[in-house]
Image 1 (spheres, helix red, strand yellow):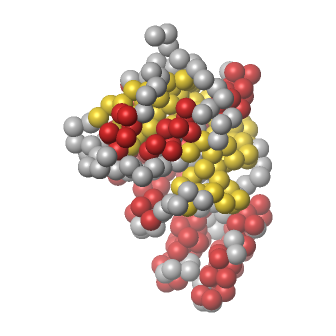
Image 2: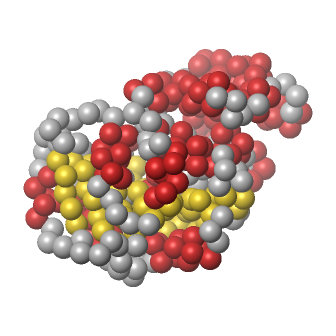
Image 3: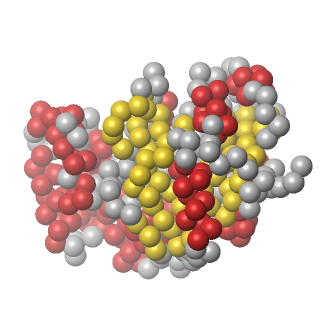
Length: 321
């Protein structure tokens, strides 16, 4: 078979209830010149059987001997088996809307300087209900060399990405370091963003499924992100002042995610944010306001329940990790 224009990579693990819907969202794309590489990372459920039973000559299913525990390993295996000029990533429980690839490829073909294009996604619950809330609360079209902005706040969802295969190879694939597990995608997007234009389309072209197993609530998430900042600083890819701004923003974001669950820890993270970057008056005011709010748990729960923090995103620039 001739090489397809786009290779789609799905790393799959114990996703039997979701994998069929995910795969058919690729099959139903209006753009048809694709191959789909599904890498089953040693699932103990029926994921491999369900994926293998879907009959389409464009689909290839690879099974790893045992579960690696590292999404980077299954994704890299899928990349190395791919033949397309462009590569797209889709998590095993997310879905695409039919025009996703068509819209994104139009941008990539029109401007060779674009290295990676991503988009917004709707939020979908485990029972398949898609609501009107976007996963990224930002209505701006972002375009340009966005390395520093991405370092401070990850606005790229893996299932939204289409990039050039050549850039993935040049960047060295996903880092399989266990210290950045669940953040290895941010590290790769940053490596691509260093020298290539990135575009974020605010239009939702798919849906991100939220359920208990993928909520990033553990305290290690911030440490993994800070590890990436340190990694890039050691390579002299980012200046010390920008690294500190990134550390401050990441600490604040994690604190805000915890403010209605663990106010004490949230306050510690807000103070850490101030210690990293005291030069930004606007940020100092925002963090001070958050510190005051942390003393009123009922008010913070009300704000988050009604998504008021998200609606103020254009002002205070909050992004969920």
